[in-house]
Length: 371
Image (tube, rainbow, N blue to C red; front, side):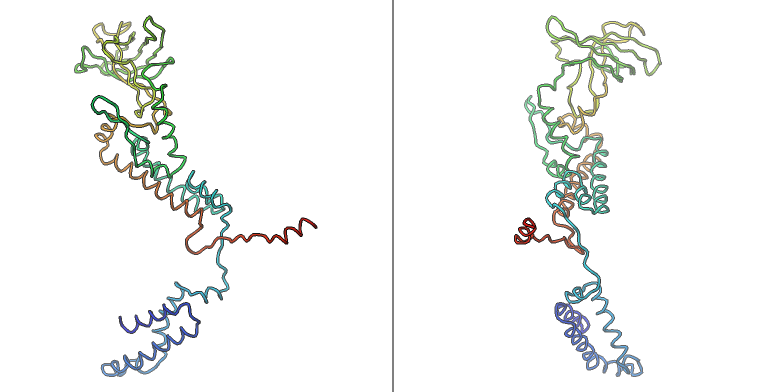
């Protein structure tokens, strides 16, 4: 450490001392220059102005010291400054922290710090929603299911511990997890459905010679001798030729174990439909015997629903690293909200101090009541 660095080090150590001690430190630095450095200048550059007068030396040494005092003021200078230290009213800190957990930035808005609250809200919620959009609405889920030895096993998604710190935006996953495991989630259609359909018509067991079709499908549950059954009708057109078709649909026989529709609640936005064509009302006579496709599932039945093994494999295959990035963004958003919650509870870390609320003396309160 050179002489100038030692002088700054002494100055930093003496910041809490009175101003007179700092002046002594400056004087010591100037004296060191005159007794040690000046002879070297005289030897090599006797006409240099720094060797002939003391004022430039004062300017060289004291300017950085004053600059350091601006950025790191001591307690004495802060106490004697005419500019008051800003204060912030945290109001009810625990309520502000709870609001910041529910909606990032809402606690700061409740405390009157509107700019910081809007900043937290835009940045944290923006990152969280961008991650959801990047993962096609499915990166947030409480658990997932895999198939092992012919059984469906439930696995926990530990990344949700970070996602839930965003608050209300991640809470639907808890509700959807319970709905997915409830008895109401089945392959049975409990109400008539009319929806747009997109799929294929094919012969036999495989869709090798399939014809693509678009249209509108209507499915109506009806009572049958062996329980509820399903009838349907598809009105649309063939994509390739544009020919209009009108088909009457029935489910497969129970022995084939092919449910006509997919689960009511699932993480896929599209609900699968698989039925047999009983009669071709309009269209080519040799159209095919089997119909397979999808209808839209309501957002309340797929958003933040637990993923199944096949759906996880499909997301990783289609999106690749984009799927991983989507989940990481939602995790980071939750971790960032910890800072917003802490700021709402404790106040800003630097530059602003919270208002200290002193309890009212009992004597004053009793005097007010009697008066």
